Image 1 (cartoon, one colour):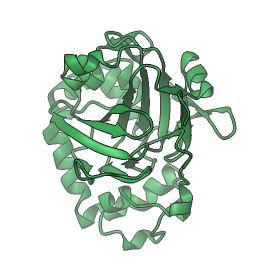
Image 2: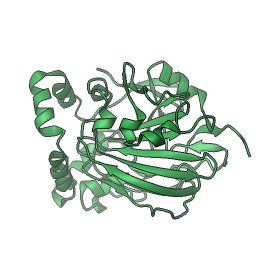
Image 3: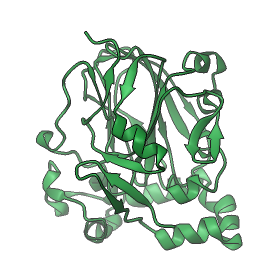
Length: 300
């Protein structure tokens, strides 16, 4: 299964370099692999052990080949010297130079919270939220709150899938105040499109963090971070009830691919047409943190 996405800068279709592609196909396409997935890989203990290894100095040796295999641009990193990282996870959550990710500061523009590949939906049915074509889930299952979910019927949903090669810190899409939050325990399936096409309601099964963000310009937003295979840790670096600025860091994922999801109430944001059109065609769109991805419907 080739994973293709639209490069937003060029408008061209590109084939994604998938880390461990053969391994993923074995896990999700073979009977032996599926058994190993269910009894070992999806368990939190597996990802926790992998995460512990990635925190040790021994893991440093993986950095050069990882950069080379996934064509990572180290000139964007705040610290370009790969020998200065104490372990692989320290490299994986590297900070970037401010100019590498300019923020769309217009208050009427919604910015992407992370680097990644986007699927976007408007006028959503909260009982039939799309995971991938042909697979759906309910918002109440995802966030564990049916009353809150009802407020978002007819609204918008933006899913950003982070590839292991991406910058793995995530940020706030607007000025505002982060309110209540909760952690939901779960499994740790891969979030690669191959896994998403095989595992029903994957996002509802995986470990995830759910937070309410009272945005200044886009009303109340549900912000979700979903864990994945080898993502033993989702770290939140913000303080609840403390005002934040647009682009401020919310947290980061340690080693592995991951996903962020945002839900907006009805008639709040108009998602950029190219993202919606590409999604309808079945393609994700590559975006960068800070990039404009939508517009406030009632301008101010």
